[in-house]
Structure formats: structure tokens, C-alpha cells
Image 1 (cartoon, helix red, strand yellow):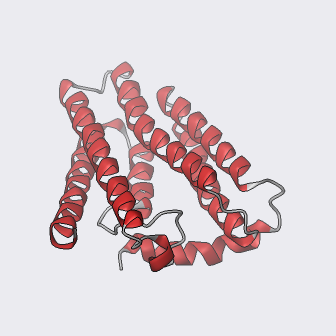
Image 2 (tube, rainbow, N blue to C red):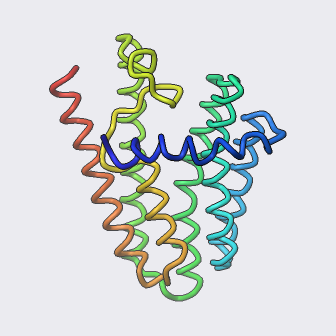
Length: 207
């Protein structure tokens, strides 16, 4: 069991008390999460680090809450899961871009940082293709959510980098001085790359 899958169960119990205070449909919560994520990217772009960090935490809170609300109230839907994953990946992709642009306007960026950003974003692309194509194959083989009983709408082949690790690294990216961005981009790229190889290895021995 990975750290992310372990903490997903813990998160479920932690957020359940907030469900009774939520007057919104789960998809509405997802849209609110996306809006706070967009606000976070704008704060990153304009170097408002405190507001960016606060909105990032609110975004992650709402992103966790929408699923708990859906499951508790039996309002789970494929559309809700689809909108949720689109929201997540959009924010994951845009925050590093905005941070790099902000560091460039602050005269702390370099060609190396832009290159590292491009490599990181390309690894995101490969990782997402790997993750969701494997999920589609598992669902096709009836080895997906109905069998694994996962909380997500489709089964997620476990690997090193998940939601928890992403929250940790993005918190560091947003909060630390721009000087640390090349190091954080490089380390996260390596970890995402290892995650891609993990799923490839799993596919070679399973499919």
C-alpha cells in the first residue's frame, strides 16, 4: 500500500464531519475547487505567495471534500469524476508554469528552469496517459473499481507519486523562494519518471 492510498482512507474519516455543513452538490464543490485553483495560479503568477498558499490548501480541501460528499450522500457520478480529474490536472499543469513565469519577471529565472519545466510537463503528459489507459484496460477486463472497491470512480494503479506527494511538492514550490524551483522541478520530475516506470513494469508482468 502506498502512502497516498493509506492517507486516502484517513482523509475520508477526517472530512466526513464537514459533509453535514456542505449545502452543495458534489459537482458544485468540484467547480468551487477549480475556481480556488485558478485563483491560486493567478496568485502564483503575480507573486502573492501567501494568498497562493492559502488558496492552494482550500483547493485541496475542496478537492477532497467533493468525493466524500458524493459517497456519503450516494451522489457519485461518472460526470463528477470526469470534471474532478480535469480540474486536478489543469491546476497541476498551470501552477508550475505560473511560478516559472513569476520567477522570470522577478529576474530569478533561467533557461535551465524553463527546460526543467518543459521536461516536467512532458512527464505529466506521459504519466497521465499511463495512469488512465491502464485504468481503461482494467475496467475492460472487469478488474477495475467493482473488483478493487476503490473510492475513486476508476481503479488507479498504485505507484510512488499520488495526490499526497503532489500536495507536498506543490506546497514547497509555492512557499519556498524561487531559488529552489529548479531543484524541486528536477526532483519531482525524477519521481514522476520513476512512477511511469513502475506502472510500465507492472503492465509488462500483468497485461
